[in-house]
Amino acid sequence: MAFVILQPCCNDATCIDVCPVDCIHPTPAEAPFMRTEMLHIDPQTCIDCGACAEACPVEAIKSEDDLNIEDEPYRALNAEYFDRHPLVADELDPVAPPWRKADYSGMRVAIVGSGPAAFYAARELVAVKGASVEMFDRLFTPYGLVRYGVAPDHPDTKAVTDIFKTLAMRKTFKLNLGVEIGTHITHEELVERHHAVIYAVGASSDRKLGVPGEDLLGSHTATEFVAWYNGHPDYADRSFDLSGERAVVVGNGNVALDVARILLTDPDELERTDIADHALAALRNSNIREVVVLGRRGAAQASYTNPEMLALRHLPDIDLIIDSGEVATDELTQAILDADDTEPSVKSKVTFAQEIAAAGAAGRPKRLILRYLTSPTDIVGTDRVEKVRLTRNRLEQESDGAVVARPTDVTETIDTGLVLRAVGYRGVAVPDLPFDISRGVIPNAGGRVVDPATRTAIPGVYVAGWIKRGPSGVIGTNKKCATDTVDLLLQDYLAGVLPTPSHGTDSIAALVTERQPNVIDFAGWTAIDSAEKAAGKERKRPRVKFVDEQTIMAALS
Image 1 (cartoon, rainbow, N blue to C red):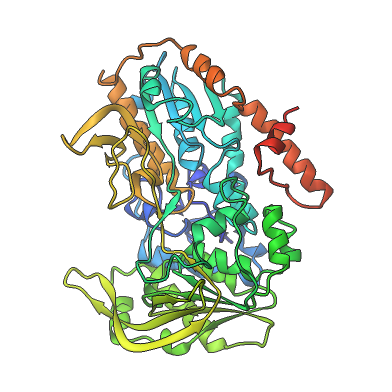
Image 2: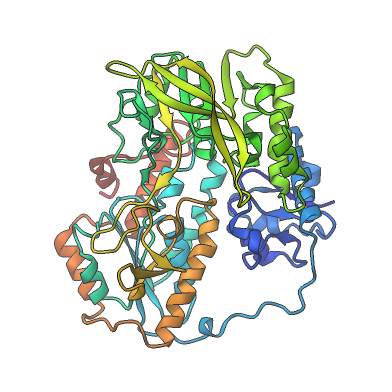
C-alpha cells in the first residue's frame, strides 16, 4: 500500500521534508520542480508511514485504501511520473549551504506584499540567526493570491495559510497591513531603514487579447471576475451581466476553469464556501446555463493542469462536453505523444479529453463546453457584447520545436452577452523601480533587481514570486522562488554589498504610525480572521469575508 497525492496539491514541498525514504518528487533540487503540475509519490518506494499526509498543509495526500472513484486517476498519474522519471539514489545527503549557518544579528529586511511568495520569503529569513523582517501590504487583509485568487470551492488549497500563521509568534517578524508603498512610505524610505527590500507584489493586471471589441460592455478580464467573487475590496463594486444563458471564457488555464465552474455551480453549494456575499447574491439571480471555454491550441497544449480538469468530471448537474473532432490525435500530436521527452501529464491531458468526448452529454441542466483549436477574432456588439466570432486553428511546429496555432478559413459565431478573458496575468510597475513592460515583471537576475541601463544589480533590492518570474506555477512554486531569492540576499549580506541602514530600528514604526494610523498588525489580523469565521459559523460557512474598511475596523473594536 502507498500514499497518493491528489488535486489540492500546493507544490510547496513540505511533504518532501518529512518523507523518510525520499519517495516524493520532484524535489526543489530537481529540474522538473518549477514546471510540474503537482508532486508525486513513488508507489514502489513508499513505506506507508503517513508522515507526508500529516505534514501536508492542504490535506492533499490519501492512502490508497481511502481513495474514492473520483480519486482513482491520481493513482495512475503518480505511477506514470516515475515511469518517466525513475528514481536515482543520491550519492550524498543534502547539506545546508554555509550562508544558512551564519549569524545575521542586526540584519533588517522589508518585504512588500503579503501573498505566498512574501510569506515564504519571511519564513526563510526568520529561520536564520538574528534576522528581522517587516512585511507591508496596502490591503487590510493578508495572503494575496490565496485569499483573492483561489476559487472559493477549493478550501483545501487555502489551508496553506496555516503554515504562515506561525510567524505571528516570532518576535523578529512584524506585519503592517493597510500600508501602501508609494503612498504612505516611499521605496527610498524603506531602503534607508533596511539592509534589503524584497518586492513580492504578484501580478495584479492582465494581458490583452488584441481583438476588436474586447473593451465592449460585457467583456471583462477573468482577473476582475475572480477578484470580485473572492471579495477583493478593489473589485467589490463591479457588476457582471448574468442575464443571458451563455458565457464565453477565452483561455483554458486553471483560472478559466475556475471561472467557468463558479458560473455554473449551484449557489446553494457556493453558500457553503467563503465566496463574497455580493457575488453569491448576484449568482443566485444568474441565468447562465452554458459556459464555452476557448483554447487556441490542442488538448496536449492546454494550459490547465490535469487535477483541475479531473475536478470538472464530477460536477453535479453539469454536463462536461468536448467535441471529439477537436481532440482527435493528428499526426503532429501523435508525434508529440510518442516523443521520449514528453511529460506524462501531457499525455494524460489528451487521454482525459478524449475520454470526456467519448462519454458525450448526459442531459444535465447545465453545460460546460471545452473547445480546442479555436480563437476569437472579434467580439461583436453595438453598445455591448452580443456575439463572438471564432476561427478554427491548426497546429504547426516551428523550427525550434514550439507548437503554434495557425488560423484557417473555417469560422463561426457564438451568441453571448458575457465574455471573460482569461489569457494571463501581468505584473504592474512599482514606483521608483525599473519595469520590463514586455514581460510584465521587475527586471532581475535570479531575484536581484537589475538596472536595465547598466545591467547591474541594484544593491539591496530583490524580487520574489510572480513579479520576479511572471505568472507561472502553483502556490507552492513560490516557495522555491522565494528561497532562491533569500539565498542571494544572505550571500550578498555576508559579502558586504548590502547598504547599511541610515535610520534606527524604531524609525519605520514611527513613519507608519504617523502616516497610517489604521495600520493593522498580526494580532489585529488574527482578530479579524476570528470575526470572519464567527460570522461564517452562524451561517454554516467557513467564513464571511469582510470587504470594506469600515467592517474590517469594526472587527478590531
